Length: 213
Image (tube, rainbow, N blue to C red):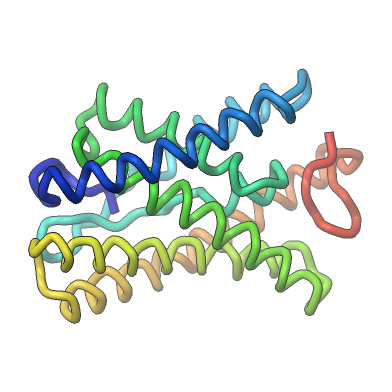
C-alpha cells in the first residue's frame, strides 16, 4: 500500500500532503494533551511493532504492494484515531526516508490512507461494533479488517485519479489482496489487545476495551 514516488502527479501529491499535515497537526495536539508516562512506552512499542508488521510486503499487480497496516491497532489500544495518525506518520517517515519504502512526494497520500483513513475507520467501526456484539476482541478484529481493506480501496481510487492504473482493475487487485491480508490483521490486532488485557487488565476499560491510562 506504500505508494512510490512518480505514481501520483506532484499537484495531486501536494493536496494529499496538505490533508495529511492538517491531521498530523491535530494528532500532535492530541499527543500533547493525552500522552503521559504510561502511554509513551506503549507508543514506542506500537510504533516498533507496526513497523515490523509492515515490513512483510506482498507484491500486488500494477506496481504497488500489500501488507498489514496497524492503524486500527494503534487507534483502539490508545483510544483515539489521532493515535494512529501520530504513530503511522512516525513509521512512514522512517520507512520513506531511511529505508526507501514508499515515496517522499507521495508520503502525504500514504499517511492519509494508512494513518488517517485506517485510524478513523478502525477506531469508529470498533466503537460501533462493540456496542452491538459486546465482544472486545471480535470487534477489534472486524474493525482491523475494515481498516486494512478500506484504505486499500482508497489507494486504488487515488491511483486511478492519478492515471497510474485503471479504477476497476485497481480496486479488484488492491481489494482482493487486502481482504485476505485484513484477516491476518484482524487476528493480530485481537491477539495483541488480548495479551495487553491479560498483562495489564487495569489499563483496559471494561466498556470500551481501550487503554485508560
